[in-house]
Length: 296
Image (cartoon, rainbow, N blue to C red; front, side, top):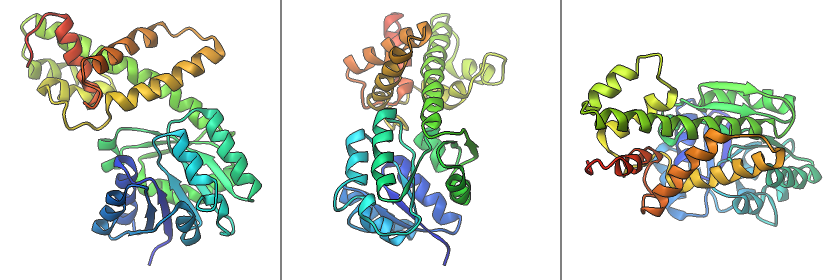
């Protein structure tokens, strides 16, 4: 049997990471407040337990993949939280995109219990997570990070150590700022080409291998080409949560972000049109509507 790794939060991202860790030879023990999420673990040969604390009591390394600050607090605090586990040398890897103040609060709770929390957001979508195409933005105690490196290698493509706790989140905000802009710029180019009468496949195939390409063009361009938004790898609703976090961080530092601010409005328009549960590539449909193009 391989080393046991814990998962708290086995939604789209968490489950993909768990599956890759199993394939890499790790035992996986998981918890999620949604029973159906825990039930899915059996299909990959992982086991489910009833609390975050139970995960930590079975594993000395635990990955957190959570949707909100409230979920993080629930996973760390109280009788059923990680901090209540008596596991010696427990390291928790926080992979979510959340406000830094909330991550620091969780860090303090775990530190008071003699445990370590790393701030390690991930760059990549749920679809990228399935094929291990993730980049780890690691920060916090360096010795703990190095101890976790084999785990990171089991579920990601690149692992970057960025220094003090919190640097990982800052880097994730920068990455998501770029994703926000590049996704809309991809849609803008696609819509201009459609308006000019070009075939969407021709647009994608040509530009994906040109000087104008981007990672978002390559990842989301096919969805825009096919007008396929209803099987999301990352929803507009979730992205709006990230936009709010980045916006607050920008305001804190009074840093100019004109392109980010303009691009964010297209996601809000998508949500207003009832597209909040569609993939973020649906910003293309929003711009097609503004351009007066018929629905595809």
